[in-house]
Picture (tube, rainbow, N blue to C red):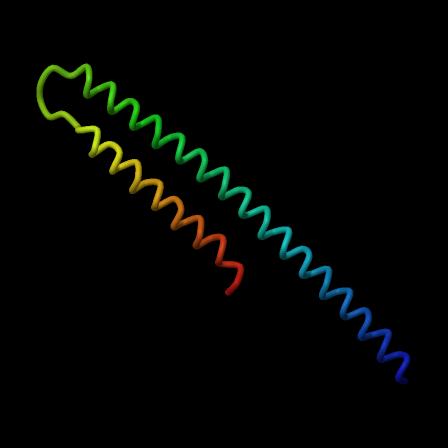
Length: 94
């Protein structure tokens, strides 16, 4: 009876290792996906900042967006992206 229990315990351990490995792989895949999303969003924000700067330089009247405002908006967007990424990254711990 003891040998049977040991075999079952070993099977349970292997099963647990497999599930842990699968969970780790899913977390890594999610982190990679979020990293790609963050990079894409950062590039989008950078592009918007450049377009805004060009509009500012070419506009002859009306309101102009200052460089400081553009940089501030880009910094806020980057902070928001990092915040969301950290939430997703740490959500697997719950």
